[in-house]
Length: 99
Image 1 (cartoon, helix red, strand yellow):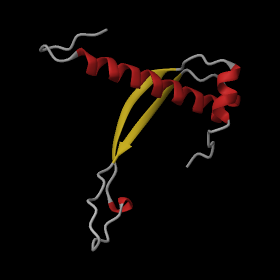
Image 2 (cartoon, rainbow, N blue to C red):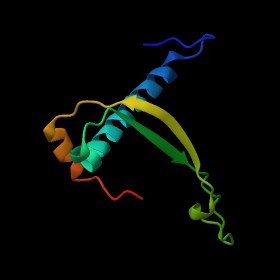
Image 3 (cartoon, one colour):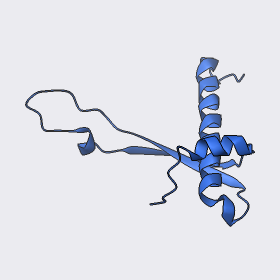
């Protein structure tokens, strides 16, 4: 699909592009379910987060909640077209309470 500069493995680029497309579709579905009745949605954005899992030790009190989350923002993406059926299926799992 795409070639990386410097002769790197193009599989990593393909995996990133697929993950980005999937995340964009999820962000689109969420925005439609949450704000779709308020007007046209033109763009969406998403963010991912990760944190280190603490090592397991019986005498350690450190938990996953004690770990800092590293967030990555991916910027704005074009809103994707989804069918009514896709939105209905997604709405069954979406929480629409905005923090």
